[in-house]
Image (cartoon, rainbow, N blue to C red):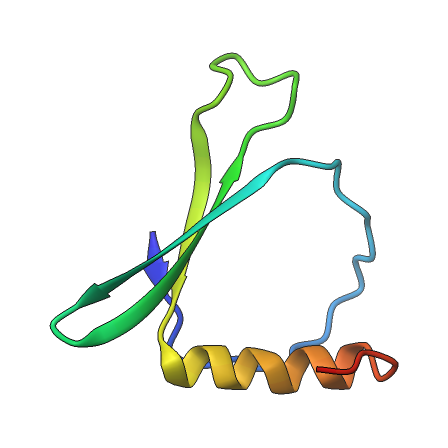
Length: 79
């Protein structure tokens, strides 16, 4: 699990579309700090169905930065 501190654009030679999975989300507050947690679950082929594969957490600052990244990546999106 990771609390995202910042977003940084990186270059890569690899451009591969991964298989689809489900992403669960929940929000909670810790010490007055609001957190969004995103949990991805393994693919259908995974040995243990329903097991969380990866988790990331966003606080207010990270969420604001993610909105900026999303608007840059998908210019047609409107809030």
